[in-house]
Image (cartoon, rainbow, N blue to C red; front, side, top):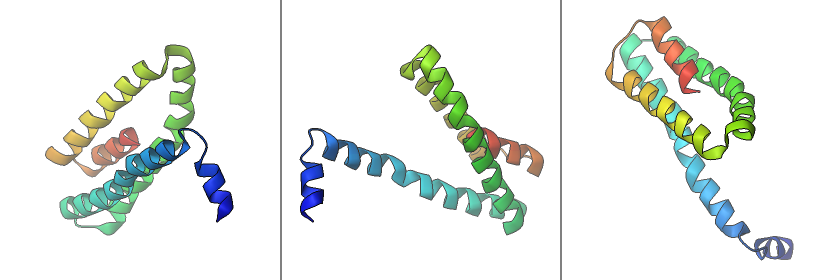
Length: 111
């Protein structure tokens, strides 16, 4: 336990850990929400699972791409761009009923 106390004494580390825990908490809720919403729309947990799979693939692709962009354009510009894309995609997926392939493509873009 004393090792943890020593680590948490590092200046700013506790704030960083707490902020990351708070920032990442909604991610799990988004997955559950997408599953419930997709199952409600399409009547199939299998299709809902495919939406989540598409979201995971999108996240796997977006990680290296956005990291490269951040080194080129800077963090603020990339964050503003990704927030805009994420928000618009999530809003469209929530409010507009589309055929499954379009919805899965939205999941890919959301990731």
